[in-house]
Each structure stands twice: as structure tokens, then as C-alpha cells.
Length: 69
Image 1 (cartoon, rainbow, N blue to C red):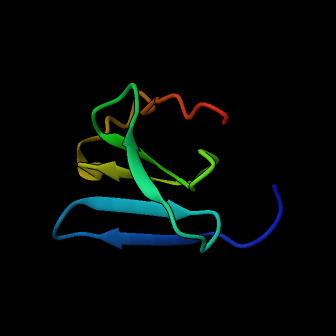
Image 2 (cartoon, rainbow, N blue to C red; image 1 turned 90 degrees about the horizontal axis):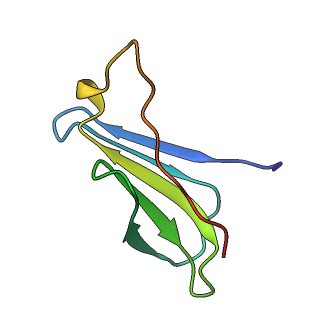
């Protein structure tokens, strides 16, 4: 994947969002309660968000499936 990404971090809400493009989309749940995928109208993943970023353990990565459309 080439191109720009946009990353937002809200320390007060403990929330991180990453977007791969600026098209309209909506949030969907994933296999991990802390991770939401952002998809476009066709179901293509266009970003993701993570809740509770500060609670991620340093010795174990956060994992979630972002299925392809």
C-alpha cells in the first residue's frame, strides 16, 4: 500500500484512529473489542481505530482481524 495515512490520537479519550484515505465510511466491530475497522460502502477497509491505547501490554501486541472485502 502506498500513499498517505492520517493518524489521530486523543489522549483524554485514550483513542487512536488511522485512516488510509478520506472516503466516506463507517465503523464495524472486529474480533477484538478494542479495535474497530472503518470500511467504505463496498466493504473495503479504509482505516481502523483502537480504544484504550494506554492499556495495551508492552510485551504482547494487540491483534485483530481486518478481513478483506
